[in-house]
Picture 1: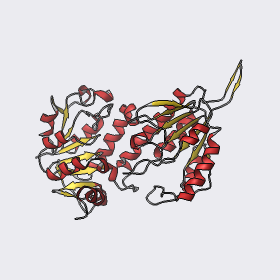
Picture 2: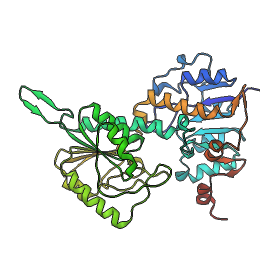
Picture 3: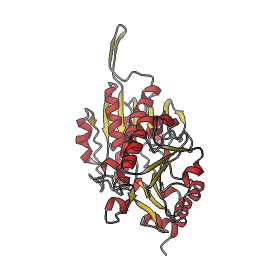
Picture 4: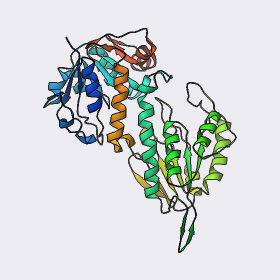
Length: 376
């Protein structure tokens, strides 16, 4: 019997993305899968049901869930949705294992095989499945547009009848995918752009985009593409040099994140108070606590003349392209196991094994198991 792949309408606040696109629905059908969509699932991403020819629709989430062999999701499934799945079914999407112990227990107890895409190994082979990168690209792009909108200045240099307008000075903190996209976007808008990252290997990437690498004399090269945590002395030195530099910056976009942990605090209240009135900070890490001490997640505030924005779910602001990229990521991952309508999980494949959160009543991701169940 053909595997049934289901996608629902996302119900998290302000979530407009959808885990399935018309393109991916066609590809899944070509692999022999039966595709089922909750009616209106793609409406937030401007993908009405009419764009999914050949896809079956169900009027309610519960009716779609009970048919699912595989559930594709953007936000982690709710406890109610997990209860509505058949035991032994598969869920693929963001699972936020570090922030949802009850959800992980429910997946375990319902014998659900859950693949947390944020656990996917970041290898060359996995690039086409890397949801963190695809969604971070949209987040970096939108963050700079927000900064430009909030700023009282032009970003580009302009020569006008009233005189020459000098370009805005923009600093992007963090040179991961989001940071690099932010740099590229700020450059396209004509700003004078600098990029800062404690990993020295990012200098070449920053400079390749036409930005200047801000060297504060502190290196935190880590493993797996992530920075290591700085020592107390290194952090103090970095913060003093950064505080001095921020005095002349017009807009800052912070993108630093550590998977599964609160965002590192990079901009202190004292740094913000040293910035010039009219400066703007857009904190892309607001959802995990923020890179700025003064960030209010989901709010835009003004402190001592400096505007600080803490937008949430930036990828959702670009739901059309974000959904298309995300759906392709999930398809490329699912296609590892799907052939002629049948699903076979190859546990010798590191991409499958390391992305698995729960399977056959066991929490397979050890850090999550220890957090949820303890060391016993």
